[in-house]
Image (cartoon, rainbow, N blue to C red; front, side, top):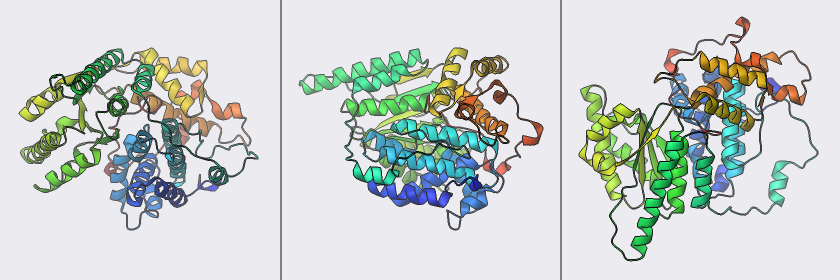
Length: 462
């Protein structure tokens, strides 16, 4: 891919930092996030850690894989910084999304890119751009038609950019209703919005009103849209005037728990502080109280700190905890402070075959691909042969199928010197089958921790 004239990771990172500076985002934060995204996309490419390290002075192979674990959540969803720029209506959100898409494309230059890397990068770039309403961008070695347009920098300099108005509750609820499936979730969120709206109006009218907890428990199998809905909830709460910023900060145990007792409280408090004014989303929250005695001790410190911070910041913070139903019940019941604050549980059901097909085709369209009818039929065959147990990835499964198909599509066109636009866009049924023996990707080192543990968007995450 590096021979295709694409930008190196260092070049893409430098351009991202320019946009970050205009948006008021700290260089260290933007750099760390972009490097994590690139690592998550390229972790299956032999030699990628060494190339990645050229953009991260002093980085080790372990740093690469640690960053990859952190960045996987953004393979199909907007990054944390981009989410904040969107929530605040920043005039730089589209430019930042485009810069992230260039980082995704640059990930295809790391090491010896596999077909999986191409698919990962295409879907990740589309997720960033779609979230910010920016232009499509094809990644890797896919050629793009030349135009007579002025360079984007000149166009931006000439344009008068106006900050977009914040979305209304009605607009955000419409986005929720447009998601595939999730009928029960939509009803519960609408109900929650109605209750909170009336409570706010009663308070403003000087009437007595019971204090209604805004914190939520999301339960369901992986890939059922929990992060997507959490992001919409954060915007809805802001539009209702219940939150000052409306950003979503997504974390797991590793980002709350430190290596030593005493440090965990500080680490957790810092994470909560970053979510102040918005929503803190804790995935697999029960991992904080699971494991051996030592792990429980650290986890309990994190939980105790979380409960205290929720009380101290009760007027401008919402916490959403998520995971499988049964472990979540045990987690909430284990601490009286949690039980008194998390009173509303929303259940996310598995998607049907038709809903998963809608998600797949939506993801493909967002990445500027088209599944031909035969490919859709093939996907139904794949679904019929796939077990639907608790480990089934739902929307994540659809995204993984698309990522693999994009890689096979690129392999299929490898000997076509000048493919047509139609050929570049169309995913065929054969692209959804197992790859040929001579294109098998190498095993990823065990140190990478490659199990995919994050949610993905419908369009952004499923």
